[in-house]
Length: 297
Image (cartoon, rainbow, N blue to C red; front, side, top):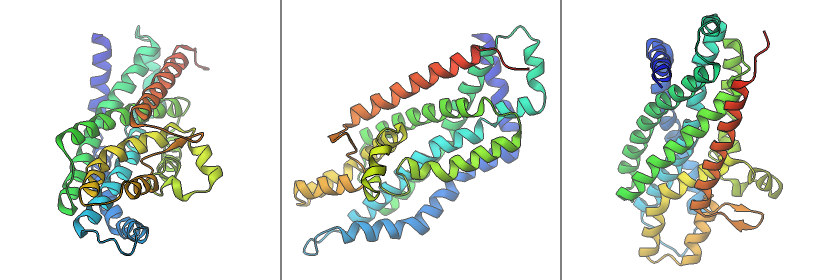
């Protein structure tokens, strides 16, 4: 255990020592929330208002709160996964700089080395994404606050689950990479594509039926839906209090991917959490297995 803690501390120190990586990781959530609020907010708002009956009057604060919650959930769903790929660059840098040769001739077992990469990635990613959550909550406070203390606590749990998922996924993807160029290419692809694949940038309900069926098999879909549920739960309760018919609230939740379906059955938030935890366990087991296997010289 002492060896593992030392490796984790070493990796975390390297992350903080690289000022470029640290700064880019910290300012990424700030840049994203500005971009989302600037370019996506109006699109989300127009889409939300256009789906409401013309005879229904909705308070501006409620509309803004719905849009802000949707934007915040999308940002966090993407950030929790993509940031881990940037933070996990230490694994590839050690290979590229020849540091792994020193590890290989040391008495430290290889799985211990990779567990050090994993846990340091989780800790560093949590630091960045907790900052992102704080920024998102500040934005929601300005636009329309309907969250409770329980909702915020559940959002922190969602954050941890998504970071664990992102860390184990980045560990598996980065394991065979040997150059920083390869890591940059992979990071670019993940950053560009993950938001669409998980339904963060555009609700899955807007896709074709075939794509919806395919995406229902991807765990990231349920991670995004989970954080959307907890981010928008207060909004839906406020809608019911102000006289929204139950079927209208359900239809809005469906359009925002809060009620994803798998083979025609609605997946409840508890099941979403179990899917994510099960995926983390399976991918984590695979990650440990490949670290035990001997590497090609």
